[in-house]
Length: 62
Length: 396
Image (tube, rainbow over all chains, first blue to last red; front, side, top):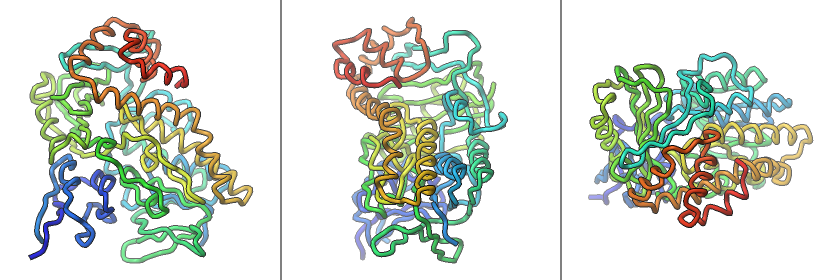
């Protein structure tokens, strides 16, 4: 079983970009209209989860 | 096909940069990752009337409402009114940002710029260590867009700066995390943009009500990211609306989330690459307003690029005149307001109440953060002693 990583709920994400601007590992991108996490880079620090204005990010094992 | 400049992002900063560069003869390409300019709207949609001075917008379709001023409500409800001296004189607009952005794009295209939609920048191109364009994804195709100058106008989440080695990552204490409804069916007879302060209302930020018409308004909230919890902005926004007579019967016709940098401006020129707008953190750290900053910086960037293309020089030396142009005006103001933001964040609610009480009958000569700061310093010289030297330095 892998370590937990940030997971963005694509149904909720409104593409504000806050998580991308704050991610210390630069692990989040938004080339389509939703943000997504590169799970190879994410260290599950939790900062994006804390700041998401709509609570669309959680820490999951996936 | 090679361009003089490729601009990543078709928001106001990108389109204004494009317009002024193209007007000076530069061959400009703007790329936009979305399929439509100006959508989704990620903005409170308020802007100062000073935007008229730039002559970059035709007609009035982009204006939802003209405003007489602003009202600030301290945590205990004390109101400070900032209005223009004469009754009926407008001080600002509430926009239709989607139409506004399309108008700016139209202006850039009319000046000669090209715009590619559905085109997402994925990296910078380099040749022999020198930036020479943007690698982009257009649907399933990867394309190389060569250019002498690259502009990152790619917003708060800017990647262009990072690819060039500029540190753009924000501290949580330099980011406002926001949620906003456009509420219909509300009872609002006001020609003022309202701001509500208080730790319980919006920790490290504020709530706002910007009327778009007589029964429609943008009602939003910004929370400082370092004081946020998952979904807090939305929770606090719902609470604010519920407790607000006049708003609590409203129905949302739009919901959006936003992220606003409230940081000091960062390095905006690196070799032949320029950052502009939110990407360069060109936002007023007190209000979170970035439109006027983008207009001012975009114009300076576009003019600098035009000159660089004319002289066929694409080094940091010539492009730095962009930063020099805004250093004494825009940057001085943003740096000052960053210090003010830090002071305001440390204030208890009761201090804000006291400050508001002392200004409740004050007549402001104009609607600006500077006139508000001047009034505060004149009333409380010892409390705001750190601000005094900053006010002397700046005239904005």
